[in-house]
Length: 121
Image (cartoon, rainbow, N blue to C red; front, top):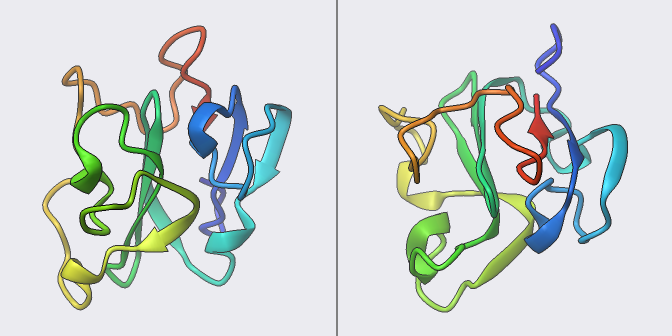
């Protein structure tokens, strides 16, 4: 996350987990354009998906459910993959307590968490 609230990601992009609308790997940081105009205050990068919380309390998710059930992204049943960040309608106007589910208890928030986990900052 940059000082102006922009979110950037890079690394392996299996399942669209970087939020750029495709599955191409990125060797350099790229701004997540789908979050342009939002002031991102927190992010979580997981193996198959990502989450972002904005200053106004909006919560976004993208990527693949990663075997955790189709509803892990928060967009309802039948959504297996979401290549661009999408607002989770359930929390519109509310601020969630967490920035996303954790598969291993580690809320990375922009730290590199393994050789195939990529970066999100």
